[in-house]
Structure formats: C-alpha cells, structure tokens
Amino acid sequence: MRAELLACDWGTTNLRAWTLDGEGQVVAEADFDLGVSTLGPGEAARRFADTVRPKLQAEDLPAIVCGMAGSDRGWIGAPYLEIPGDLAKLAAGLVTTPGEGPLARIVPGLRCRRLDGEPDVMRGEETQIAGWLAQDAARREGRRLICHPGTHTKWVMVEEGRIERFVTAMSGELFALLTRHSLMRTEAPAEDPALFDEGLKAAGAGDALAARLFAGRARVVTGLRPAESTAAFLSGVLIGADVASSPALLGLARVEGVELMGDERLCGWYRRALQARGIKSEFHSGEAAAVAGLFALHRRAEAP
Image (cartoon, rainbow, N blue to C red; front, side, top):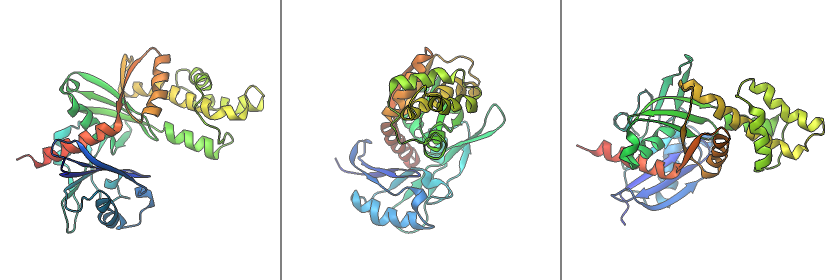
C-alpha cells in the first residue's frame, strides 16, 4: 500500500496520526506526546513539520487534522459551525493552514443551542460521527442516539445522517477533580464492578448530583466502606447520573438504544450503566470512526 494522506486527531493531551492509502486503509500509525495544552504560540506548525511528518515518512503528503488543533490554543482557529452538521458542511468548512509546504487542513467544530437555552460545542467528535455514518449507509437513515464517553462526554442526536443536537456532560472531568483534589481523593483503581454498581444505584435518577456524590465521603467516614472503594463508587455515581439524566436534555423522555463510540474500556462502563436501566447499546471503535471521518472529509473536499 502506498500512503496518500496524513490524517491526525490532535487533542488536548496527545496526537494520534495515521497515513492512509487511496482507499482509506491505514498504512502506518503513531502516537505523539504533543497535546495542544503543552504547546507554545506558533509551536504546533513547527512540531507538525519536524516531528509528526518525518515519523510517518509523510513530508510530502496532504494532511487533514481534527480535534483541538483547531481551537484557540492549537494550530489555527477553525470555527464552530452551527448545527445541523453533516459531512458536506464540515468539508466545506475546512480551514487551510498558512505557510509553505504540503496542503494541511483543519476540521471545524460544531456548536448548538441546547433545549434548555444554553450553548454547547464539540470539537473532534464531529469527525468520528461523520466517519461512523460514512462506514454504513444504513446508519444515515432514521434517528440515532450516540454517546461518546470521555472527559467531556457527548450525547448526540443524529437524524437522517445529520447531527441535529447534542449535549456535553463533564462526567470524566468531575471524576478526575474529585479523585485528585477533593476530600475523596484517592489513588485506588476504579475498576471494581460491584462497587461501580453500588454507585449506579446511588445515582438514582441523576438529580441532586452534588448530594449523591457526598455519599462517597460518608461511606468511608462512617466505616461502611474502605477509602479504597471510593473511586469505583464515584465512577458509578457519575456515569449512572449521566446515563439517567443527559438524554432528557436532548428532548428524549425514553431511550431504547444507544450507539457507544470511543474507547472500548470506558464505553464498557457506560454499557453496564445502560444495561442496568434496561437500555440496549452497541460499541463502535472511536479510532476507526476517526480514520474513516478524516478520509471521507478529505475526499469530499477534493471532489470536483
């Protein structure tokens, strides 16, 4: 296979890159500890040219990049486009980076006004969703509810192949803050299914979250559970509350099925929470979707 495109997902903490052939198949791949949060002004373009391209022997290839590279802290600002969003709109909004060298484009993000009147944004997930839709034409029919777990979990309503609305839950960031900086800080792992299930039960309907989270502290000081149990319990409370309450912000009174997209381990915990509420789910690789999305956007942009 001969590489024809350099495709990158450049996030806050790391950069994942692939070279793709003319059919979108992966030729080579690499990870870089080059999150945009670690870069100084103007450094992104330089590191992309002298570190990323040489590593993958992609010095002369066109490139397409999604994620935080398009933020105000990244390479170059790529705007947030108003929903509805689809492949055509994202491809039309690609931003070309300045300077000499091979063509490099940045994928824009999406923004919306939630049903509660508040704004919301996404950057990176739109490319994965576009790729997931491009992988199977049947997915572009009817309505789909996608959950993309992470630091900022996204719940996305897709209708007829378009992102119509979405809502972000800070479940992952709250977990990190609570286990690193609060009275419930702990270095214990959060991988205990039984303790996770206790957290799911404590999450209830997802309301009064601040009160429900304090149970993690009270369980320890009253001797009900050891301090080492806290992380798994808090994970259950946060994910359980997210699953129970976030879809309502999309206008859904009832959820029958969810498409889980992203990291398989984290999606597994969301699947467990969904199962506890009698909701079916299916896992889809976030990496495969990102590659498919980047390739589809490149091809759409290059089409005459």
